[in-house]
Amino acid sequence: AQSVSQHNHHVILSEAASLELGCNYSYGGTVNLFWYVQYPGQHLQLLLKYFSGDPLVKGIKGFEAEFIKSKFSFNLRKPSVQWSDTAEYFCAAHNAGNMLTFGGGTRLMVKP
Amino acid sequence: DAGITQSPRHKVTETGTPVTLRCHQTENHRYMYWYRQDPGHGLRLIHYSYGVKDTDKGEVSDGYSVSRSKTEDFLLTLESATSSQTSVYFCAISDEWGVGYGYTFGSGTRLTVV
Figure (cartoon, each protein chain N blue to C red):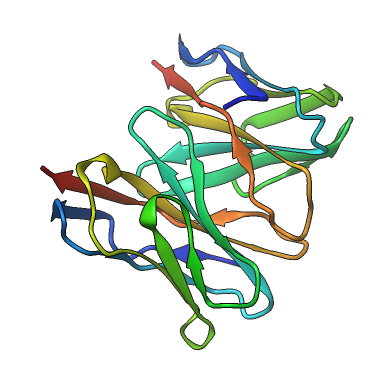
């Protein structure tokens, strides 16, 4: 069965620090990958998505993610975080004929 | 989010009582989903629907049933609520299948079973 793993459950950073959140998926075939963000008290919103082509994907709010097929990874990055980036981040994977499967989430706290 | 609403937003219920959560969409999307969100587990799929009266089980369907009598409404019922069903429930919609264009989520229902 398809699975998605996020190894960092909680991350605390100071403003202006760089961010990298890990995501690994288990499915070996063609897969679409997503990062969602959930701000406190809100629903999930799409940050970025990868379907094919350039493995470096740029999303909203300065986030980007890199798809590395050989490592089954889709890590999320941001060069300089802000206090407003405090949220929970979810990686998700979807392959043809299957469900959107989520990782366990990473809670990011950015200290001002 | 615009186009998808969940009701109620919060509910406290007693163990053993039936509970129905409602998801309503105005996007005319074919696919609708119910997820539960629990710390450390991310979102797990409970049930989904691929059309009116067409539903199927997800990863954690035990203790839940769903119905979809109209395109716009997808109901999730806990037949006899248990404390393990205390969670935040999210409805999602999508207009593509098997390609993964991403889902649009509702604002969630926080359910507490006491």
